[in-house]
Image: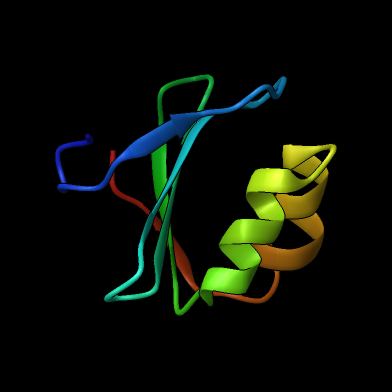
Length: 75
């Protein structure tokens, strides 16, 4: 659980440490290996599922989420 009540999943990635998802509000949480936490807003659950199962978390995040959804650093 992060400070925002969302369960975080540890992932195997060179630049992403954990990901989590708030389905009610469609918010994706991404904690990077430098310990910064970003949220991406309006992300459908299908994109979160795709991110979880992607062979490269960083590439999937860059191609399918970063350029398409508004985001902000919250930690």
